[in-house]
Image 1 (cartoon, each protein chain N blue to C red):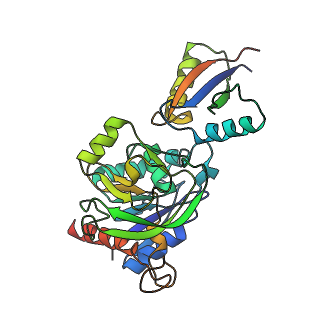
Image 2 (cartoon, rainbow over the protein chains, first blue to last red):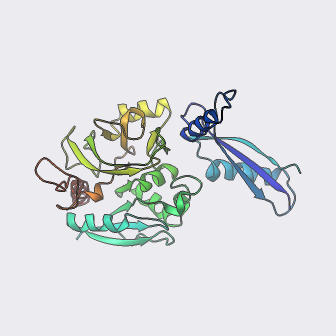
Image 3 (cartoon, one colour):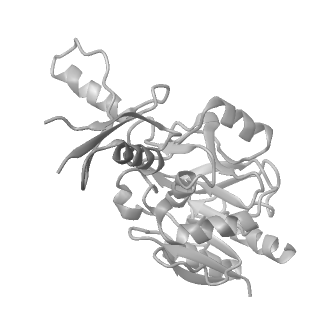
Length: 83
Length: 232
């Protein structure tokens, strides 16, 4: 069945303590070319039927109402997964 | 007797303590279940602390879409007092009954301490028994208690006197303006990260200058709502 991918990131202006902790660990690996890390989420919605505009509209709706909280996060991508 | 409902969600931890606090304050606690569409005609509602649905997705996010939240939303609109403690506060922000959101503590660690708070607003249903600016000490325990909101929202909350509790001495989780709790516009819905229900009985509360474990400052939040309900 086709899959719609939804990606969510913490808002840029908010501190991302999780990303900060990962960045600290990268430093300990000696990989100091990476100046920062931000951690987001990827959701994969399995779709019954075709991924048409209606399905994408539904995905955008659940992304905004449940998968992300617009106060602290941004939906950065809603698209059909490519194989 | 005033009846105050406490909603139990899968993963609630502090529903028992909340019911106990209500009983010690002189009201009748009523058990409510997240999967019902029924508030049982209670006079006020408490959303307790815990880790509802394992804090999956975001803290309080899935609970905010529970069946009973539709009734909570209707009750809140009618002016019924609603208190969200910790995870309950997170649910109220996720349900958009309170502005802002809660994010992981800025230092990344879980924090558990007896926390001093200033009561910044006494015009809410849950704080009318306090003096403006009075300081209280209640336990605080959270990993994701950092209060955030955009600059306009924070300015509006400050201007409208809707910052109800503010951290004193230290900000334990990096909250904007040291905000520990906020109210809705009408003042009937209040959420806070610290746990007043753990400071209601001598022997089990925070230490005070008088004696160990004797702090009962939290009880007055539950007594305040009794006054509010009786005042109609």
